[in-house]
Image (cartoon, rainbow, N blue to C red; front, top):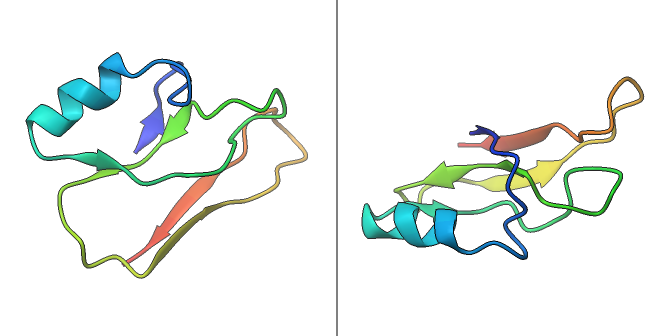
Length: 68
């Protein structure tokens, strides 16, 4: 989980590398006010309940969360 500074909607190289090691990116919405998805969560399991983004008034990044 973290700020990768790579927009996953336009740059697929990071996802390809992570998929090689059986990780997949599960954040589907935009995570910044610039409509980019650069705050990502990679998992290698299927047993999570839900994932999402929150609004932040102190940053242009939207915090991401995962419920296991």
